[in-house]
Image 1 (cartoon, helix red, strand yellow):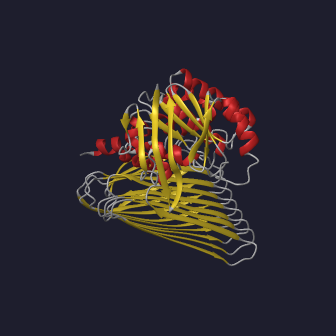
Image 2 (cartoon, each protein chain N blue to C red):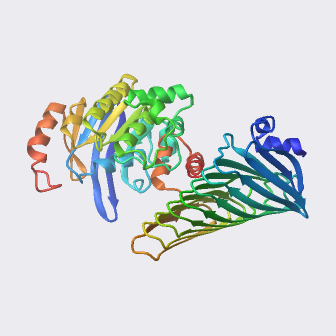
Image 3 (cartoon, rainbow over the protein chains, first blue to last red):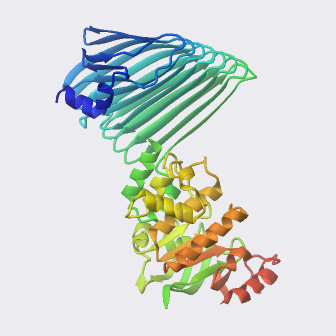
Length: 306
Length: 239
């Protein structure tokens, strides 16, 4: 499998041909392709087993088209380290679509270490979509430390619903300044002996800061998941919500540990968590329309992970 | 000719007898109403005919189109043309109205979905991409559930409290959809304690204490229900 297949799997053909769309394509530790647009500075250099990337968006800049980052490994065995420093200038807007494609992984480690600063009044949206092999021989360790300045907006979505998870260990932490808004969502489907660990934390330190942590997990066979969501509110009028839902089947095991900590009487945080098999009423509704039990379960899980 | 024949049906839940030696026939192509105050076993009857979980361990027989269906699963009964709409429809996180309705039909075109939504008085462009979750009201989900039944073209439809959570304007849409089902040849069982819904039936069955207490014309049952059952304070104890 070559680079063309990687691009095909990531579905970024049109982005590769558009000069108005910024992109950075990496295979293991090699930079394959880059393109930047006005106001966006991308400085990427190859390092041992990975790539060190600095992305800066100038102040008052709006990047119209989503920026595509393709972190692929076409090898069966490899280590890929991605070190990222992202700085979004004040009052700027950018949306990033990261494609993490590991189609042949038998023994691959993908390690990401990101520091992200979203400036005053800026908006940053980050969608990370993983496509894995069916072997389950991959370990994904993404870590991000994010700072939101006053009035900044952050929206992250992590999606791993194709192929086997292998082992994933997410560690994201965001500190939210005054009137900033943070939404972090993870959607993961595990099977076989996959292991999913999610640790997401939000510190609502600025007055009026708001945060939502959402996890949607579906587990089958012998997969295991542990979701640890923590929201801490220390400022006046900080608002937050933690929402975790996990569906398990077969011998899968799931746990959810929502921690809400409020250190200010004017702040308010809520949480909800549910773990269990597919909802009986949903299942029976679909079966009474003529779907088999398996078809009904597939549809319900597809909805949950959408 | 009867499409559904229930013979000596008895069912207990958690030790309480809910259906009590109930026998009744439902004629093909007809709109039937099963009426009675709360707690007489109407919903249990509907769920038992559909074969839902918790409603399968009963005595007696349910014969559908001359075939006993006691041992058939919900899915197998649906494949034979039976379906049910819940009093309080399920919520499906992330599942769009389009995908939900398409799941009931072989012809999975968007036009079919749009047409069904129009038939229950909903604007397709407003609803087709929305999720069937808590973002929709109970009444909206009820109409969407009915739309999913319209595309299925069932032979026997059980509608449990079709008016619950429905506003006055939307109730007319529900009645139109029932008319449409009838015109397509479906047999309809309306489970209700509403006189307005009862009026839409062609034949009525009054239940009390888990059994059929009376059956007859809508006018006759309606009069009895209004005068005797609504003011009745000795629940489940027919005179």
